[in-house]
Amino acid sequence: MILLTFDDSINTESWAVMKEILDAGLKNPNGCNIRTTWFTSWDATSCPSVFEYVSRGQELADHTVSHKGYAPIDEISRARRLCVQCTSLDESEIFGFRPPLFQHAPWTLDALSVLNFSYLSTNTDSYTNFGSAEKLGNKFWPYTLDYGMQGECTAHCDYSARNPGLWSISMNSLDEYRSGANLGMPLQLMDPDLSVTELQNLYWNNLLLHYNGNRSPFGIWLHPSWFKGKPERITWLIQFLTAALSLPDVWVVSGQDVISYMKHPIASGTTNVPFVCPQTSSSPPPMNLPRPSAATPPLPPPPMQQPLPEPQTTEAPLSQPNEPSIPPLVSHSSHGEALSIAILWVLYQLLMF
Image 1 (cartoon, one colour):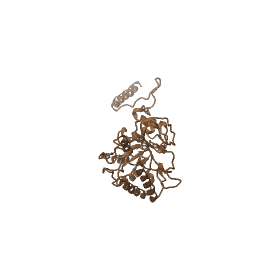
Image 2 (image 1 turned 60 degrees about the horizontal axis):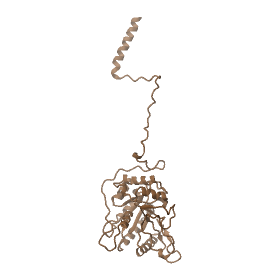
Image 3 (image 1 turned 90 degrees about the vertical axis):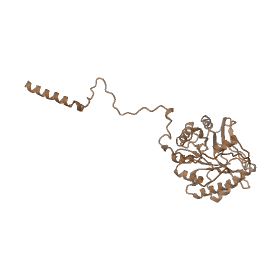
Image 4 (image 1 turned 180 degrees about the vertical axis):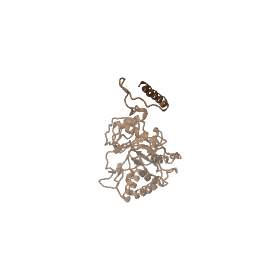
């Protein structure tokens, strides 16, 4: 299984990159389109682009509202609500979370459990003992956190913490595959700044290590900005995936698909298909939401969870009881009566003299 994931905002520019990849016609062994996952933050995201991505049957996942490390629960929950507001998805269909900057703590995992997320995907969870040949191609498979985090954790981790039912999808690194002192050492996790030839050598050799090893999911972890000004990288990625999909039993799937497979594995070579075709939608996109600004909170709390603000008014304060108030203007219907009284008053004054 290959996991192709993007991180950060979905907007016109970043969606154009993903769209070119999805438009390349890449197919899984069952004849269906490949599936990807986008861990979405909302500092520069637009709803129409989000809807376009989801309507192609792709997985939308949580990356907080404002790309904040060690995110509190409201950053995570509000980001998920934005995913829902921009699409026809339900909150229960936002399965995954990736902590920005790979920064998470025990309260992050507790928040994911409370919010009923299915999985966490981060790099701070991998084998120790790098530099040995036996680790090549033998990476962590996804596992539940019923018994805590395994391997080496470089964030604020509590190995005694338990989060039953929450899965971990480790972001396995790209490793040095050549013989020598650095054999098996992690080289890069995301966005390697290499030439196309170097990228092909690095990714293809690591893919084969997985394929001929324990076949744990192989990750291609990228930011859309990695492609900016380098269209040859899009071409390379499409060609790489085309070649990978020519191998038997290779699928390009979402994080949601991986967890589904872990819960209900299917043996290779059987007639059962492990993954279903992605559901597409042609419904019109919802209206765009305002983008969060740096000067104001990224998203106000939902109306039902906070009292409505006191209404602002420009009305003058009520007059005190002993103060004279300004009389109202005379209405048009009273003009005739007022004029008659004035004439009678003048005649009375003349008669008196």
